Image (cartoon, rainbow, N blue to C red):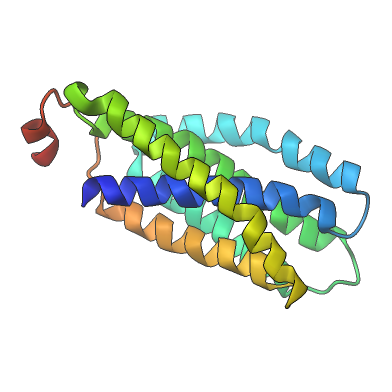
Length: 186
């Protein structure tokens, strides 16, 4: 069950990361500026997540960043569209959360899986992430029915995935598991 939880988290992280980035060109304002802001937010996200993971462990920051990103994506649908800056700022903050949690799930996955199967499990997790990336444009296509659907789907799945990370063991400052039994004892 632990593996499926991690793989679902990879799926949602990738879907949220790429979906929000691709959605930026459909938002009001300059599509170039929107995309630039989506790219620029990755630098502070990496710096902040590094500090949080060092200070607070792995699970809680990943949970926080996923829920933070999900809430901002959902909230961007329900703010006034009079100013295109406010929804854009919320979506950029959603990308901030997705970037920070994506950085963390790499670290958490590498530390949870035992040495003897680590590469296989990380490869499987990466495969789930690619499925998430492939599903992002399909979810964006739901905007033809209602413009609020894609970011709401990304947000809800981000919140669910964030909460599910709380079921994972905390591995900060623990020895890397060498066998499957070590992983089960985390």
